[in-house]
Amino acid sequence: MRRFSVALVFISLSFITVLAQGDTANWISVGPDKSGFSVLMPGKPTEKVTPVEGAPGVEYHEFSLETSAAAYVFSYTQYPKEVTDRDAIKGMLDAGRDGALAASGAQLKAEKEIKVSEYAGREWLVDLPAGLSATNRAFWVRDRFYQLVFVVAPNARDTAETLKRRQELANKFFDSFRLISESGH
Image (cartoon, rainbow, N blue to C red; front, top):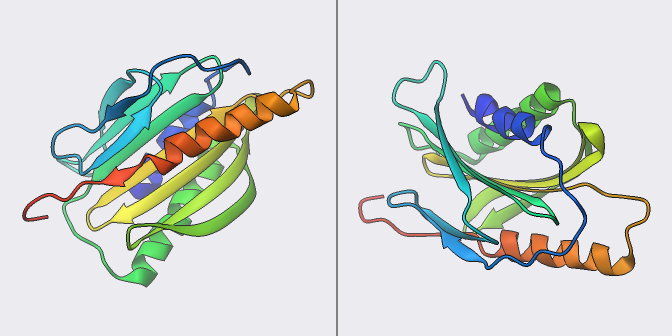
């Protein structure tokens, strides 16, 4: 199930084409009721909900937005069972990474462990097919799997200013992710 969620994001991203231009859209907060998060995106994203195959009642929620500078994807899946065991979470993050790389044909460039609040996460830098590059952050929070992906189309003619602007956009997106406390959760 988790492997499917991660792979779906990378598969959908492998078809996105973006230009390396400035981003002029207004950033808005995205955080549907009972989703347990908020994140800033530079415009209103498209939301897609897909049932997770083999898991009745489990849905994959994806929010995506393509701008002239980058593509932004945020997704979450809520599972019926809470998982708090660190080794189990590490195994799920490993399986998600491996499944996404295999399904998308991406090449892993770098990886590191990260956290949001006290929850374990992982950051992957990958090269995707069609010359795209992505930074992916994934977190397991109790019974939810969250994923943020920032995708660009690097070009040998990119200026230092273009690279700096992309990094600023990525930082704003990733650093805006917040968990929202829900009563009883």
